[in-house]
Length: 231
Image (cartoon, rainbow, N blue to C red; front, side, top):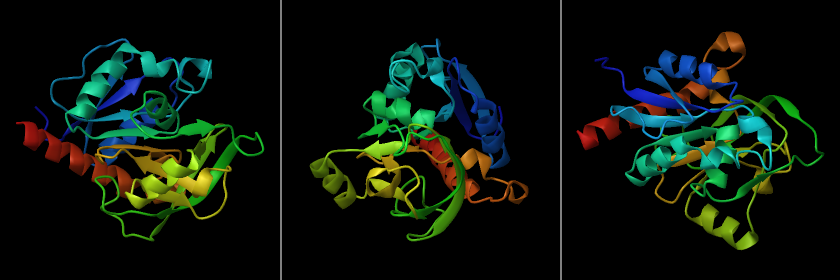
């Protein structure tokens, strides 16, 4: 058995960043395993789960809505409920919100445009499983590519989330009309995170930035710790 922690990457019809996520996770010390959306169980040695970017089920109904009902998501829910680290990237973030594993919703971008460029995000809370290799206030350059990435919650929920430290990443500038420039949030337990930027596309300076590797490496650390905790 590999000494690297296994990270399950759930693949839906229409996922197109699943292999990218697997490659990036391998680059920062994980053993990625692709899991098909119809599988109702995760590999028994799973230490963490990634829901990758793409256009699951063609983005019909709402982005992530159909994927949230896939058999694999029942396994993801059980894993998250047991404290396992789960990361949703772009479409994965949308799926987690539709599955009610994360607060808020992702709406069409402000100008209804598809945004595809590098974005600067600022760490709003470094005291999480996912951001602990960063410092609060640190700025990271990570690419975005989405048409429905404007995170939204009602005012009361937004204030509560901010007070509890569940808003962990904010855009340094208005990228898509997201409320409060929110780019990433965690659940109340702190073991599930969603973000619209793509850290898997920012793990090598040759791609313009390696800042995403900080987040993914912390995620792999959390996978290893989870496996030790349940051993």
